[in-house]
Length: 190
Image 1: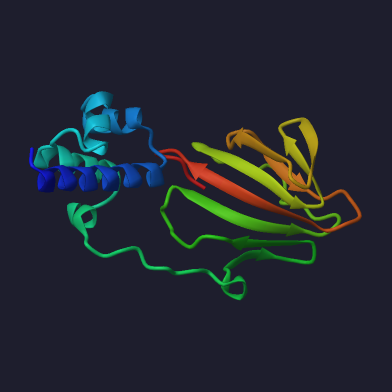
Image 2: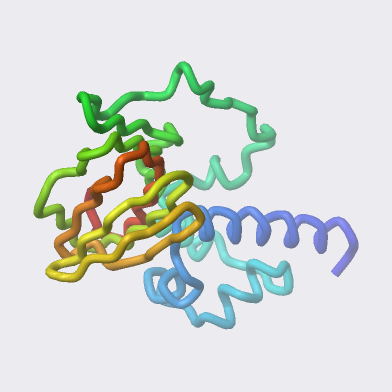
């Protein structure tokens, strides 16, 4: 192959890999969705292999994007969310939950939650098809998963499947802050 073709294959592969990673899909899951081998996905992503228009179309469909998105020339635009502009999803005397990202349908959500003493997310939360990560930024947060509880201190984190009934609360005398990430697998809902 000539250098221009090699560069085009590498760019195409890099864009597909970025889209796959942003979607949260593994190579194995993408390969299964498109009905090609994992090694073929790897070769395409690394720029070592051509892909037919049919395969590119199926890859884009599995990654919830268009072929035009894949070949778009525009660079990503910086679009920060300023602290004052964050969407407040819940606010009362003991809890404030804000969205830290604004991309809907990105495969994951990230929230910042401030818990006053006595604040809690509310009982019996369950979300099939998701994985959640809690990272405590400040204070102490009690995490209940089904019938088990653990107290997480600043800098601690926990990961769990969302099918497990869960609740987060602040049973201490000081304010607590946590980052809450929800990662949706295909078909998962929040």
